[in-house]
Length: 344
Image (cartoon, rainbow, N blue to C red; front, side):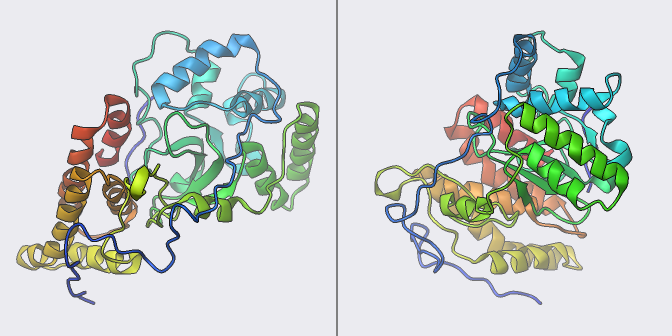
């Protein structure tokens, strides 16, 4: 499987009084008071998968850092009922979507030893965070995938994104079946209606949930300690005394303005001057890491990755590595394998 091809007002500086300040945004809720909604697992109502798929699922777990839900195999099986010879292209005619990534491993029956993180760059686009694993690709780099907050967590939602537009991730549905059902329901064609009926029948036979609850976005927000520029927010496991996260000293809108000012600077001298404010944020994030609040670096790193710029990218690459370096020093190679794809 080949690596994906990567695509692509002057704000005043706002600095906190001290690097250790734990200033809460108005929208923040303390960890003690925050609701703890149960994270749905895609396997709760899905029938077990045939044992013949288990070696490939292990390869996916190693190569993509993805603990695959049973739904992944069930969706592949559904596509084989549509086109036994070319199941990866079974949705092309109607939805212009192709099954990729983990589905390719299932289709090829890969069961040999896979190195940890061997496939993390497969169908990964410029703005994609490591939490996203691409499952379906469409026109103009549009793609859909599973989103999970840690490599050991089964994905709870499906998101879509188009890197040619920006780094925003849109929560589509709790499952891939529900996402495809939603897409087919919006297609006013006879062929889409026929495919939708087949999907519903297959789901009923295999005890698969097809509908979203409508609470996915609010439940996601309740789990997050802060918003991020990609729209998905950041989930951090807090320890005693709220150790693990402290907010950035600027709002999302202010951060976007700072980054835009750097990207659109007309001269190198002007760019260096505007970089000072962002450099200071990186410094504070590094201090936060030293004190156990690694979530601030993750928040800043995710927002840097999601920021859409048509200007110079080189300064952002340097900032990206500066934000990640403290994490690389403090966390094991399993997490590092995920983080390393950000700067590709």
